Length: 446
Ligand code: GBH
Image (tube, rainbow, N blue to C red; front, side, top):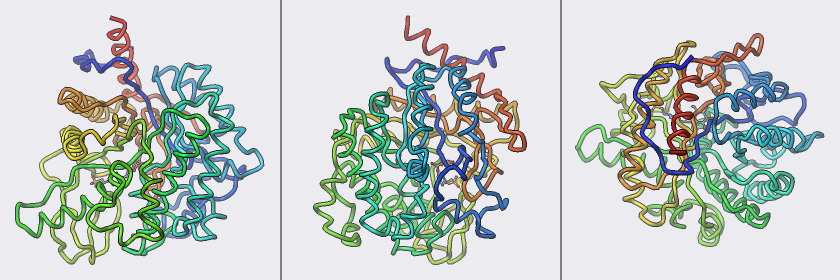
C-alpha cells in the first residue's frame, strides 16, 4: 500500500538520524499516577484552554505505550524523541515507566532520545518560585543525575530542554501557557534559570558518562515587514528575543546586545556553565515570522493574542499556504534559517539536528502534511548541500496530541488518535514517511 509514487527524497549523509517527536504532558495521560505539574493546574482554570480540555487522558500513552512502540517500529524510524515527566519521576513509580519504555524501544530497534524538560514543571517546584528561582536549576540537575543513573546504560542521546524561549515568552511573559505569569520583561530571569538548568544538566549528564547531548531550541527566520528603519529595528529586536537570546549563551557563552545586564545572579560565571560544549544543537522549526514596528493594537499570533504594548508587531506572511492552525508554510525558511545560523556562528555551531518540524491538518488522507514534510525535507537537504552539517530530522509528531492552550483542536500527528476511544489510525503521511525511510535505507546500503 505504498503512497504516492512521487519522486524520492534526495539522499542524506550516512548515519543521518530519522525520527519522530512527542512530549510527556501532551500524550501520556495517567495524571493520577503522578504528581501534578503547572500544566495540570493551569488547564483546570476556566478560560485557559480553548476547548476547555485538560491532558488528564490525552493519548493515554502510559497505558498504551506498547501499541505506540509498535507504531514506531512499523514506521521504521531510527529514533524516538519523547520527554520524561519530572512530576512522574517524583511519584511512587519513579522512573519505572520510562525504564520499560526504553527497554521496549531498544527491543524494537528504535533509539530512545529523551528530552529532560518539556514545560511540565512539578507544581511543588513552582510553589517554591519555579523558573524565577535560581534553585530550580540546581533541583533540575539533581533530577537529571537520577534519570541518567537509571537510564544511561541504554539511552545514548539526550536533550536537556525543549524551547526555553517559548516557555519564557508564553508561560512567563504573556501568560498564555502555564504557569500563566504575565511578567512581560520581568520574565527574563525564567530564561536565565532555564539556561542555567540546561548547563547544569549537561554537566550532570557528562558526569554520568553521556557523550551525545543537545538542546531543542525554537528558531525561525525573522522577516522585516518592510525595509523601513522602524520595521528593521522591530524585526531585529524580535530576532534578539526569540533566536539570539537562547542560542548565543549556549553557543558563544555570551548574552547578545547587553541583555546579560537584565539577568539575575553572577551572569559571567553562569555563562560558563550555560556554554558547556554540546555534541549537537537541536532546532525546532515551524515557520518564519514577519515582524514590523508596533501598531498599538493586540495581535493574533500562532493562536495567541499578544498585548498591544509590545515593541514589535507580528504580521501575516502573505501569499503562502497556511496550515489548519493558520501557520504559514515556508520550507525555504528552513534553508534560510540554517545557512543563516552557519554564517552567524561559524565554527561555534555544532552539528544541527532538526528536533521538531511538522504541521496541523485535519483528516486521515493528509496530503497537505505530506506536501509540508516533503517540502521541508528537501529544504533541509538544500542546507546540507550548502555545507550545513545536519545530522537528523524529527517530525512533530508521532501522534495527534494535546496542543497546549489549543487543547485537542490541533492535529499534528502522523497517526490519528480518536480521543473518545484511544484508537490509533495511521494517516497517509505515516505510510508516506515509512516508504521514504525505506528508500533512504535502501540507498544507504547502496
Ligand atoms: C512546539 O512549539 C512545541 O515544542 C510542541 O510541544 C508543540 O506541540 C509544537 O511545537 C506545535 O505547536 O503564527 O505561524 O508564526 C512550537 C511553538 C511554533 C510557537 C511557531 C509559535 C509561530 C507560528 N512555536 N509558532 S506562526
